Image 1 (cartoon, rainbow, N blue to C red):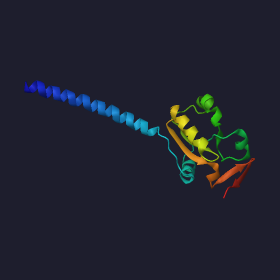
Image 2 (cartoon, rainbow, N blue to C red):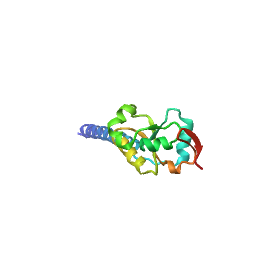
Image 3 (cartoon, rainbow, N blue to C red):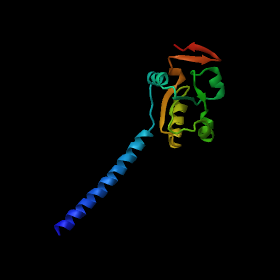
Image 4 (cartoon, helix red, strand yellow):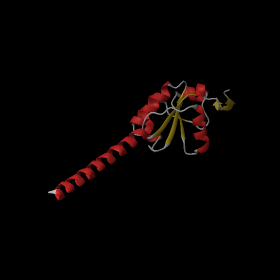
Length: 143
């Protein structure tokens, strides 16, 4: 009888620990895909140290042509659902998203996360970017 109870208890603990591990794994995946906002300073450090980081401008083409952060690729928020898979094929890529003031970048970051992208950071608006920008093809300081 004691053997049976011990075996049942051992089996229960084994099953419970497996379920806990699955839950923990799911929780860690969920944490990776949460919305994250970072300040310009942190975004600049990432861009300076990670050559593979994707800088994504989600404004309109005319806004992009007028002024953008050097190295950015344009994918307007209005086109994101239909073109993200083509323009951003690696869902594990490090993506930093910006717009003009931070509203569209937040929406775009959340949309990308909902589409399965894992490493997405909202860096807000270009109006808060204190570093160099390209204006109509000319690099200028925004400070």
